[in-house]
Image (tube, rainbow, N blue to C red; front, side, top):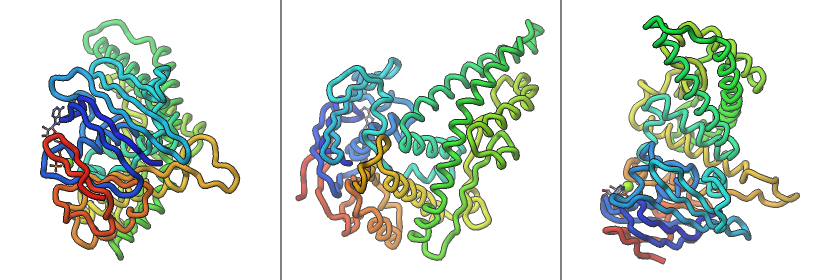
Length: 391
Ligand SMILES: Nc1ncnc2c1ncn2[C@@H]1O[C@H](COP(=O)(O)OP(=O)(O)OP(=O)(O)O)[C@@H](O)[C@H]1O
Ligand SMILES: [Mg+2]
C-alpha cells in the first residue's frame, strides 16, 4: 500500500499543507526545525493513532489552534480509501473513512501500516521496559487491528482495579472499611482474560520476530550477534510452560492470587502485561547496560527491519488474498533522520535493504546524507512550506 496524498490542518507547525505522494522513495530535505519530522509523524499517526515522539496528542495540535486534522488518501492495489482524523486534545478524537463518520478512530487502524525508524528508537534498547512494551503492542496491533480493542479493555480494567486497590490500601492504613474481596476476584478475572490475550499475542510475535531480527542484525553488523529476544513476564516462572490463551489465563490468575497481599499493601496491580519486559540479548549479555552505542543502534534498526519483514510477509490483515494472488499490504517505510546517526557502512546496508519498499519516506537535514540507492522524489521543507524539488 502507499499514501497518495497527505493533507494536514493545524498539525504541529503546519497551519495547512498538501503533499501529493507517489510510490517509491520520497525524501524531505531541509534545515533543522522546519517541519520534516512533523510530516512523517502524521503518517505514523494514521497507522498507530499515536506519535513516535510524544505520548499525548496535545503537542500535535498547532499552538493556538484547538484541534488538528490529518487526512490521507491511501492506495491498496486497485482500491483507494480516504481517511480523516480529527485530534481534539482533552476530548474524544473523531474519524472518517471515505467520508463516513459512522466510525471510531480505532476503525482506521490497519488501513495505513507503517514501519518507522527514528532517532528515538535507541530507547528501544537503552530505555525503560515501557518502550519495549509499546514496540510489541504497536506491532501486534498492526498485525491484528482488533487487538486495539483488547489493549483498551486491558487498560480500562487495570485502571479500575488500581482504583479499587488504592481505596483498599487507604482503608487499611486508616482503619476504614475492609475491601470486599469477592469484588477483587471479579476484577482479577477480567484482568487475566484481557491480559492473557495480550500475552499470547506478544509471545507469538516474539517467536516470529526473533529469527528475522537475528538475520537483520547479521546484515547490518556482519559477524555480530546472535540476538535473542526473551520475554520477562511479571507472572514469573510458570509462564515458561504456558503458551495458549487458556494456559496464560490460568497462570495470570494464580500469580494475581499470590501477589494479592502485596497489592493491597501497595495499592497497585503488580502482575500483568503492563509490568513485563522484553529482554534484548546480544550474545550472552543483555544489550541494555552492556552493548556499545553502535551495537545498540544496530539492534534497534534490526528490530525495525524485522518488523518490516514480518508485516510484509504476512500481508494486510483481513480476508486472505485470492488463490495465487499477491497478499497486499506492504507497509510504508518511514526513515526519520536515521542516516545522520549511522556510519557509512551501516548507512549503505540499511538503504539497500529498504530501497525496494513499495513506499519509502525519508527525512534528512542534509541531502548528501541520503544514500544514492534511495534516489527518488524530493521535497524541500522550509518555514512550513513543502515544495517539490526533484523528479
Ligand atoms: N504544536 C506545535 N505548534 C507549533 N509549532 C510546533 C508544534 N510542535 C512543533 N512545532 C514546531 O515544529 C518545528 C519542528 O519541526 P520538526 O520536528 O518537523 O523539524 P525537522 O524539520 O524534522 O527538524 P530536524 O532536522 O531538526 O529533525 C519546531 O520549530 C517546533 O517549534
Ligand atoms: Mg526531524
